[in-house]
Length: 324
Image (cartoon, rainbow, N blue to C red; front, side, top):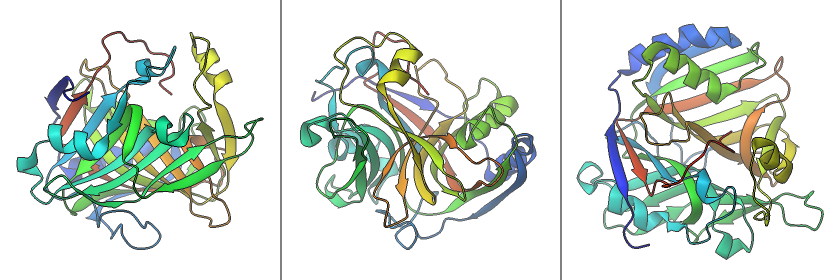
């Protein structure tokens, strides 16, 4: 897969203060307490983050939608394996990333390395020459016979993902949106969906993209981990939910997250967040669904505004199954 089809979309330019006002007003429909500010991104190399770069929000920020769910469902396309250290510098313009690329987000993990389908949390720093500087990525999988366990691994050298990835690609640290929400009063949504719905309500068909990270505190979180690949076609969301393994994971958890308010016709996954437990006694992680204790939950997020959207290796044949 030396050359992949790709498309570039310039996202709606919106300043941080406008977004702050929109989110602070609209998120109050979903949460009992909301505080949104514009602030300098904290040092993401330091505790409690321990990520691969100092921050987001400086220079250019892009969102990358790589591959897609149709390469996984109804049956897997095993040829779709991507090395992020190679793919991102090749397609996300070097001229706007003179200091290299910081890559974070949610992916399907490299099954050839793990021997199983799995959930990847990407966190990779690549230098201007396209060489890996640091890899703080993780992978979560369920691998026992009854698939009741969770295994979380650090990926020091493995920079591949498979089938699909939703990524934030950033250049340097700068100003970001800091979003604090607690006491979820809308039981039909979650943190990322409430952000996306708030942006869509304000901006309509003009997509606004945010990339960043968030904590879940004081609540357990519903998480899924993909089983190994299904040998029978998954033809509906019910099929997908029966195939996934669901877990309840204790706080605090930290998630890498991508949110796009609307799809301009690129067959996007509009929100996707993967994360892991910050409790050292709990080596676990996976795909975020929602908090399980809405009256107690506290969310704390940092998001950069994206200027560009790269759609890479878009599936020719598509569907809307399994996009949750």
